[in-house]
Length: 412
Image (cartoon, rainbow, N blue to C red; front, side, top):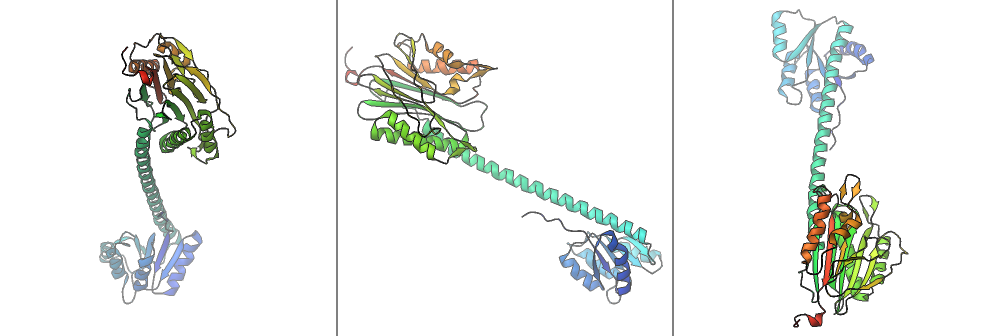
């Protein structure tokens, strides 16, 4: 609950109405809010519900006099710190002054009162009260800000834990020899300067008895929203591919769903870049469909690089976008390499690592070089170019055709 600053009030206590009227006439024109009590008992009742900047208390009152009233005020926790100025017609004998200070008075004023002096003294205590209220209000604001920061941090840590779980599911590498006739290696490295998890992912799965789908993707944004969007894209694409087995049509269906979605990432319309490769394990036939991703390339068995110039719109941008299939073929020993822009956009000053450097690093690695070594070379080269720290998440997927399934295990 927000702290409500109390308005400065002045409590006047005197058993004689004419004295209260006189005090009010001096103070009210100065803008002070006045509360009047005609006895010590009535004053104590006001102090149960109101806060006061100062109390002007008459000494001589029937029943409970000023000294007794002041003593009762100082015994209560709520009112013990309120300054009291005694108003008296008595002489300033030492015993009276001592008695007043002993019960908590901060000052004495004798009747007849000097209006200018009275106003000046009251104003001092009113201003002190207002300053104190301002400090309390600021302290409450700081406390609420700290609580809100703690809540935000707790929410951030919760979202991060969920995002980490989701991302791990997106980045589960299959065993290198899980699929007969092909070796698959994946590499992922998070940006060193990113507090939030990114949306890079890869996927490898069978569609039908002889076809293998290879997917590399990058969802815009960071954190939980990006991780959730990544899961949506990955598993929706899986479902469509397994149902229709038409890669271009499947990508088009996923795009339509994403374009109709209201999901934003950090207030910006989300989009997804993706490379989809479908490899026929028996024949080596390859279908490549691009959704705005860096084009993959083939690293042939002799170590030469051939770019697969597949082009297409990122998913979630244009609902009517059509996706075309680029067809090629992998020979035994050929490797297809797909990657996200975290590799090509590794930065040194204003210079980017770039697509050509990726191909140059891969070139010269024939089929005799272990596939995981090729993946490590590519990622290491990008990282070293950027001074040891990638500016964006980087994801690599390499698939090498080693034999047709019917030949696996047969004598060479």
